[in-house]
Image (cartoon, rainbow, N blue to C red):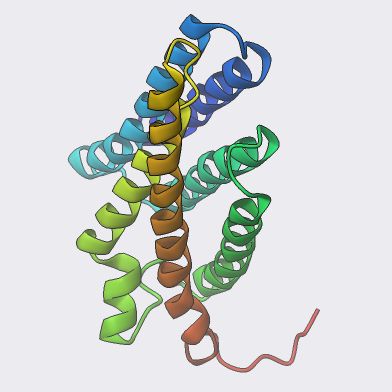
Length: 201
């Protein structure tokens, strides 16, 4: 059930993206896209709760959770860049951070470590895995995406739309900074966690 929820939220996100890209003059489509976006991010917390509630925690579940997070998050950054709502650099930074950290975490999982359990330094562990940092980043990211989409609703007055877009931009700045900050500990501790390897393939 938990894994189904994890995958289902990705489909909700793609429907929202489709509505935004191909129904640009429809107020109702944008409202639905906004609702689906909120729902997709809400399910991110639900899948973890269900996994704990029904004892469905697994490495596969953790991997699917990270994978769905990346797909949803990166798709929105790319969408905003394509639509001209944000600079493409937001997408470049998010994608690069994701590729690097996920590659390191995949190698760590081969050694039997969990994605967040690979951190050994207490400060690094707090930055990447603490509830406070995870929630702070999630809230900043979700608020940024929601406000950015809300700022493009066709029925809004120009002044309101402009103000929401400005707020969304600064929320996006906060989100992308936290994205990078939470990825740095993974890179910093990569060598000590994974050790030297003779296989450079």
